[in-house]
Every structure is written in C-alpha cells, then in structure tokens.
Amino acid sequence: EVQLVESGGGLVKPGGSLRLSCAASGFTFNYAWMNWVRQAPGKGLEWIGHIKSEADGGTTDYAVPVKGRFTISRDDSKNTLYLQMNSLTPEDTAVYYCSRRLISDFWGQGTLVTVSS
Amino acid sequence: DIQMTQSPSSLSASVGDRVTITCRTSQNIDNYLNWFQQKPGKAPRLLIYAASSLQSGVPSRFTGSGSGTDFTLTITSLQPEDFATYYCQQGYSTPYTFGQGSKLEIK
Image 1 (cartoon, chains in turn cyan, blue):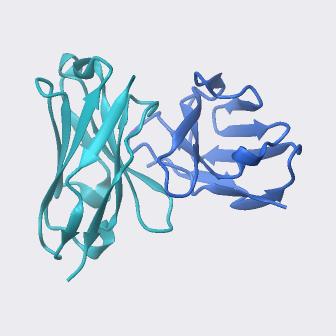
Image 2 (tube, each protein chain N blue to C red):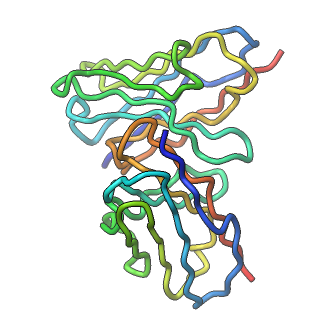
Image 3 (tube, rainbow over the protein chains, first blue to last red):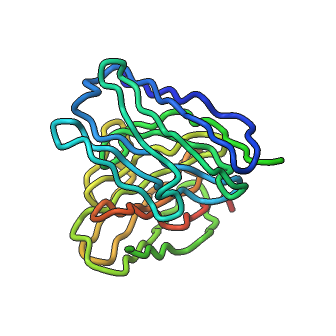
C-alpha cells in the first residue's frame, strides 16, 4: 500500500525556517518524481515544486513565490522527501502536501505550517 | 506560466444529476491535464489524468475529455459522496498550475 506521511509542520515566526519531511512507503521511492503542493486556509491548491528521480537527474524546479527560499531534496536511502523553508512570511501559512509522480496519484495527509509572530 | 481558467467556481446540483466542469488553459497543453477531488480537511484525490484516463478505483461516472486548451470533467448520476471541490491541473510545463477550483454543493 502506497503511503506518504508528512511531518515537521508547526508555528514559526516570520523570517524563520522549517524543514518538512515526507516519509514514503509501499513503492520504489527512488524511481518517483515527487512534488510539494500547498493550500493556504480557505484557498486553492498551489504547486510549489518538484524533484526528479536521481535516474532522471535529480533536478528540482520551483514556483516563483518560493524560488530562492525553499529547497526540495530527497534521501532515497531513507525513502524520504524534504522541503527546507527559509525566510518564511505569513503568506507561507498553509497545509503542505507531498505527492507522487507528475500526475500526483498519491498524496500525504498534509502538515500545517503557520507563520505568525 | 500557463494560466488555468476553471468554471464555474461553484455550482449546486441534486443527487442523480449530471454536471460538467470546464477548464481552459492559456496555451496548448496537449492532454497533460489532471482532475482532482477534494473534500474538507482531506488531501486531494486524483480522478482523471492525461485528460481522459480514469485513475484506478475511481467510479466510471467520472469522465474527462478535451485536448489542447479546452477540457471538461463530467460527473453523471451524482452521488452524495461527490459533493466536494474539484480542481484541474496542467502537467505540461512548470509551474504545474492548478485551476481555482469548482465547489459542487447539494441543491
């Protein structure tokens, strides 16, 4: 059974940093392109970035609002995806989801990040 | 960036009705279009990928069509569990933008 479990969310002050994790199981993680998607309270879905498999170069791409502040990485030995978030602002307050593959066929349950003083 | 225009933003319907949601993209995306369903407090669920391919486990009353810039999601014979918000997403080029969502409510 495919499972994605996010963790690491919480309350952080503006300008602070946070690292989210997404633990994967039930599939061959190292073959999968992985995404991070967020949803601000009461708003729609926003794709924020992805990382390709190492076999496809392991490269990353980001949406403009997070480029230069957020970094996606992966540890295939731990079947874990990461999202390092720096210079956080209140506009980054959202539930953060990881999802699998270009078509996002599986999603985690999400982890809430609140940026507030 | 590819812009997504999804309509309607909200609609109301009754159990048993047929509903259609449309998604228009600002440029040709071939068939790189996905549809998701989201219920309150839950993660999105993939319904349709590649514009018209039904994801495993999704009921056949959900159908997707279109290519290029115009796409539709049709739900025939609405069931109580179908009342939710629906999103389209293009997977043609990054950033993989979503539509703004269509909230389907019970009439």
